[in-house]
Image 1 (cartoon, rainbow, N blue to C red):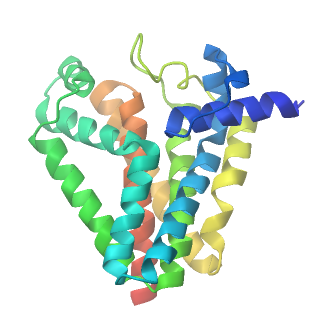
Image 2: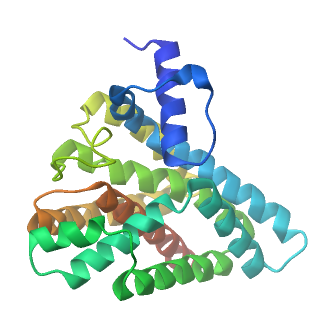
Length: 253
């Protein structure tokens, strides 16, 4: 049974954990809040995407599309504290520079960035920038919103099937097994936006993401036996980028 005040508390916990937005003091903090908050990760993504779209539309009145996209990306990086981009860089450093499971986990935990991580960040951000700049403005707006929400939905789907591999860690309270009911709520918040205004393009996006999810999950299991918080950030970034590229490819074909 849903209790509105508890659900509001879980949503605000998610907002405070996954962004830099301050939350009211009455929300408080309990470790179990973070696990319950995971279901609202896509809703937070929806809000981040809406901010990106709003900044883009405002900037587009003054600047060319390429600059407007870059400003919208900067807004999301400030809003989230580059939370997921950090996971992307850490995973590329770990998977690119380690031969054993323990080495991968150690490198992933290191706060310093290496060559693999730096290159991955540059390439990922450049691809997002150029892909969104190449899209018609209103299509770019909708994809920003849809991609931020849907990519987070697919990222937390690993909470259904994989094991968190660290004994302790910042993400451990979040990374408990998610119930199918909780994931259904997350999917309702994060996936419908892919299907408007073109449901066929949305179906293609979902198909691409499902295939990617399978292979990324297999890779996580093979390399480290499961996932970490950085792995979720890594996956979210790849899913987001895939949505942009699929959307552009669909329009161009």
